[in-house]
Amino acid sequence: MIAVTARYFAAFRERAGRDREELTTAARTAAELYGELASRHGFADSMTRCKVAINDELASWDVELTAGDEVLFFPPVAGG
Amino acid sequence: MSFKITVVPIDADARKRELTQGTTGACVTFEGWVRNHNEGESVQALEYEAHVPVAEKEGAKILAEAKAKFAIEDAICEHRIGKLAIGDCAVWVGVTAAHRGAAFDACRYIIDETKARVPIWKKEHYTSGVTGWVNCATR
Image 1 (tube, rainbow over the protein chains, first blue to last red):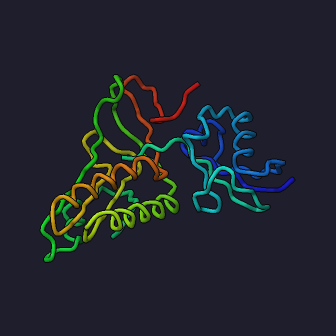
Image 2: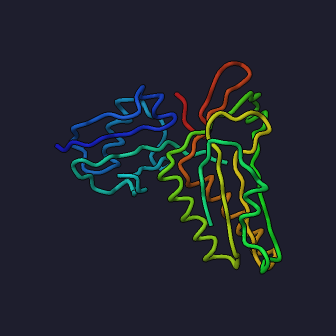
């Protein structure tokens, strides 16, 4: 188990009812953590349409998490 | 080259003056405006949100890609966040080049990639009083 911080934006923040939370998780990758949080908070967007950033750098979903990481979950973007 | 997220109205004339001039034969600009309807719903206002550190990093990457792919001299993109009214300019792209072809192509590339990759979100406030995040699943 490792301790990480999850941060939520836009629709995810509203769905989770918070913009961040400290977690202790058995998830090894960002994808596994998304799976865990999606079922807890009811995120309905498929991971392929969302993005993840770790410590303010965009990352791939299969990147391995490290203790202390700040994991940013981005719902489907809609700029312009 | 600069990609910026701003909370104040976009000053298109000022941005244009910042673009390289003199050696430049073409300047193509694009403005994205807030419209009063989307997918059959009547829209009253829009709220944009961004995660600024990642948005500006990814935006800078897009501009660098455009510079590598097309024969352009300079490019600027500015995206506004916060609550916007109908008709407001939400995003501005300006590209200069020696010739128009590269300027058109690069401008198109920058706005398309920005919409697809940069962490910016849009919440529509409908006249019915309901709100909705564009592109996001609802359940």
